[in-house]
Amino acid sequence: MSKRATRIATGPDRSSSGIGAEPPCDRSAAKELAGRPQSHFGRLVRELSEGRPAARLLQASGPQDWTGPSRTDGVIAHELRQPLFAIGMASENLRLLLDRDELDRDTMRCSVMRIAEQVQQAQAIIEQTLLSASRRASAEVPCSPHGQELASGNEAADVAQGIRRTIRQFDSIAQDRDILFSCQLSDKPLVADIAPIELEQVLVNLVRNAMESIGERRERGWSGHGLVTIALHRVDDDLLCVIGDNGAGLPDGYADTLFMPFHTTKAKGGTGLGLHICREIVGRSGGTIEARPRAAGGAEFEIRMPVYKARPGTREPGAASGSEAASS
Amino acid sequence: MKAPTVLVVDDVAAIVEELLTLMRLHGISAVGAADLEGALTALECERTIRVISCDVRLDRGSGLDILDRIAEHPELHERQFQFLFVTGDQMQFDRLNPDPSLAVLSKPVQPAILVSTLQRMLKVAHV
Image (cartoon, rainbow over all chains, first blue to last red):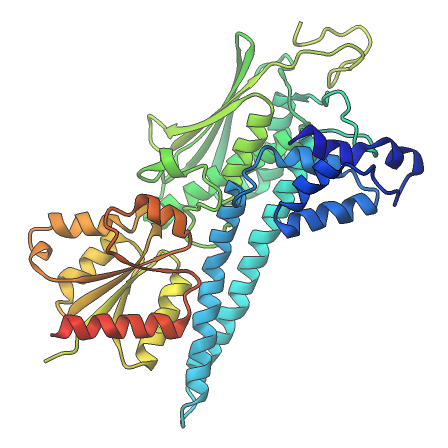
């Protein structure tokens, strides 16, 4: 994002006068903003007038080609076309059925329910997208109320603790579904440079997917005991967390599509954003997440994240007076 | 002689179901499939299929692959088909499309346009 555009959001007039103050008149930046898609510009103007940290939005947007839609815009537009297509067909079918002398109420009822179901699907896509964008904006660039960038965030998470909390969440469901958790965790805290809430979001997503994959394998006739394995250890300056399952395995061509937004392999439901969000979260921490077939059948997801390095004046999670930092 | 049939291929069951209803209400014979394997099975079983309407983005792979799959099939490669592709991303389709003469419509397709396009293709196929 250009410096000229940023200055409009953080100008001295605005910071001294507070909410609703006119930004300094920067004609070149205004001209640049005016050339942008009206909806985005309109939102920026609204955010500025409400005194909200528009700079965060500007910076979180990242570099974009303003001559066309961003990649995310294109993906969202594409995915929303699906339910719109189904709604369009269903409403046309309703119209045709209403024109008939004899009403086919069953088919009409199906079309009405289809419209309602696809509206919900579109709402789910929008909500997931907004949630992802909101988390991205709040986690990526911490800002003061006047839009000035703060020192980068210093949250860190004890990964073993996060894994134990995640397993506790799924414990009773796992028992009901005959799924066993097998963990290899270090006794020492292994701390990664990631916010605890985001770590938990990643772990919950992966464990849930593992359990659902086992369910899918059972639907295909398998009657074995389900197993979800979680291993965590340190390799040099990285933490390696591998979550495996003996479920249905990965689909063909998974390398290209698995982490794509809105790609889902689930037969029912799912917006296909879970793994994409996981990859985004881990990526923001300087880490990677990869999927591969598990040697004994099923799948494995490997998360690699840098070990947390304490910044001056910050405290590591679980640190009390006298305890050593895990990263030292 | 049985009327020519349309094969509708889309990985979203809701879309296939509504399209089949639309075809039925317009008196068009149609069958559906959720993926390329299902499409090939339908083509092998239903010899009246003349027009294939296929979503470009399928759950496992690209709908455009159906062209190669048919060309490589020992029996299907001898039959004549007309193809209509449906895409939610026109720009990506233009990048991936191996044949600029392929018919394509963008989602959400207006039902009247879809029906008239398929009817026109069926007329050509029937000749």
